[in-house]
Image (cartoon, rainbow, N blue to C red; front, side):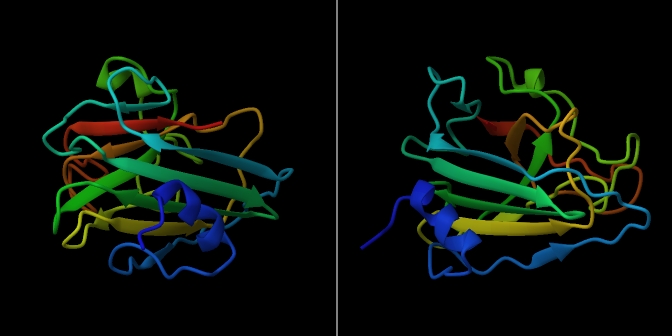
Length: 186
């Protein structure tokens, strides 16, 4: 029996991941001088539609009807852990995903730039990169651990799924192609 993606995040956070998709490597990053802030938990889940600003699709070819996702970001004590689970995407395909500065909008660019802990720094230490590859049924997952806490006065507002894996070096570092779908974080 398949479990809906929005139910998998609580299981993943509890360490009981026995769910959809191939294993994704935990992305660890290190930074010096991170100062912890109060506990912050952000989450979002839903089926991607054109009518729902909280879970909106921009490219129906890469996020077919029935595509859904769930994301949770928990931040405290100088650490941020983020988990993403997707279902219903194209099978056996790599996507990029990042936290973004603004909430989702009707136009893909309305979610703004990538959220950066250290303004102007484009790498998996300062940003939250959640690239994933779907399995044969279009399900996948990713998780990230960053050595800093969210500033409650400057939080990410969305998770954007991109058409390509994130470029990890060179002049296009951090880019991941067109925006496919977006979840507004609460």
